[in-house]
Length: 404
Image (cartoon, rainbow, N blue to C red; front, side, top):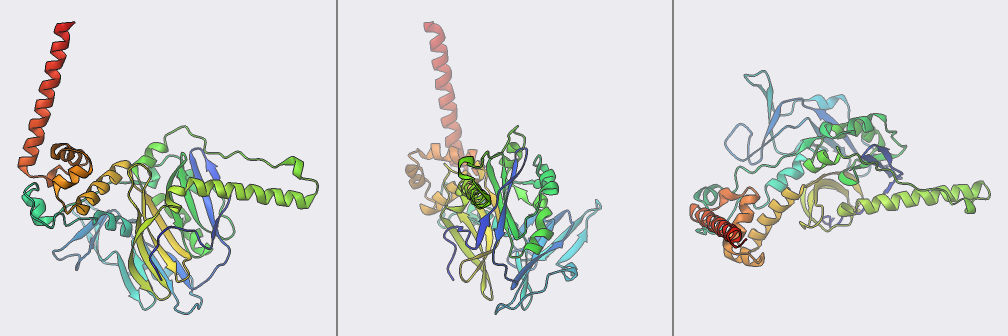
C-alpha cells in the first residue's frame, strides 16, 4: 500500500447537489458497501482538550490544545468479516476529565490516534491533520544562524497556533444540514459555501454517515468560509432536459442520466482544488488492510490549499476522509516556513529565492506573524529601513508641495 498522491474518489460518485442559499452540499455515494470497517462518534462536551503528543498528557512535554467536541472510533476486521455497528460502547472513558475553577471542564488525553482494542482505535477528527500542519518545520533552524532569536534557537516555533471557526458560525449551514435529504447509499458530502469548497467528508458505511451527518456543524472551517457564508450568493446550477431527444420513457431515462453526469462533472470541477491536486501524505497508523494517513496539498499560494486525513483500503479505495481548507494567510505562513526549510533556514539564501533583500523578506515574516523568530538585530534593521523609507516618502511629499 502506498501513500496518497491525489484524492481520486475511487469507488465513490457524486450525486446532484442540494442548495440552501449560499450553501451547496454534494452527496457522495458508494455503490459497493462493505461491512469490514465501521466508524462511530464519541461525545466529549468539554471546554477544551489537552493532548499529550510525546508522553502522558499530565507530564511535561509537547501538547496540542483545542476545543474538541467529539472523537471518532474506528473498528475493522482483518479479512473482510462484517463489523457490528458501533453503539453505546463508545461512551467509555477517554483520558482524564478535570473541572476548572470557573465551572468548565478540561480533558487530558494521550495521542491523536490511540488504539483501544485489537481491532479498534480512536482518533480526533481534523485535529490529527491540524496537528501535522502545526508541526510543519516546528523545530525551527537546525543551525544557530545569528539572524534568529535566542528563543527560537532554543525551543523552535513553540508555541505555534492557528485559528478556525465552528460550523455553527457559517450562515445557512445548520439549516442545510437539517432540511437536506440523505440519499440511499450516501456515505459523505462535499460542502461548498458560496462556490468555495469548505470541506470533504466521507465514511465507509451509509448507516455511519446518517449518524454523523449533523456532526458537520461541529467541524471547524477556515475563516474564509465565515465570510463566504455572509455573501448574498445563490449557488444553484441551472440545467435542463434536452426536449428534442425525448420521444419515449427510455429517452427520458437517458436524459436524466445525462443531467446527473453533468452535475457530477461540474461538482468534480468545483472540487478540483482538492481532488486533482498533488498531495504530500504521511502514514499514521496501519489497521489490518487499511491505512490511516494525513495529508496536505502541495503548497501553492496562488490557489486554494487543503489539509486532511484519510483511511485508505489496500486497493486505494477511500473509506474515510475529512478535510480543511487553509486560509490564504495560513497558506502563506506554511509556505514561508517550507521555503526557509528548503534553504536550510539561511535567511539570505531564502530572501534571494524570493528576489528580496534580507530586510524585505524579514518584513514578510513579520507580516505573517513570525516576527518573533528574528533576532533583535534583524528587527532593528527592519525598523531602520522602515524609518528611512518613511522619511524619504515624507521628503518627496513635501518637495511635491513646494514644486506645486
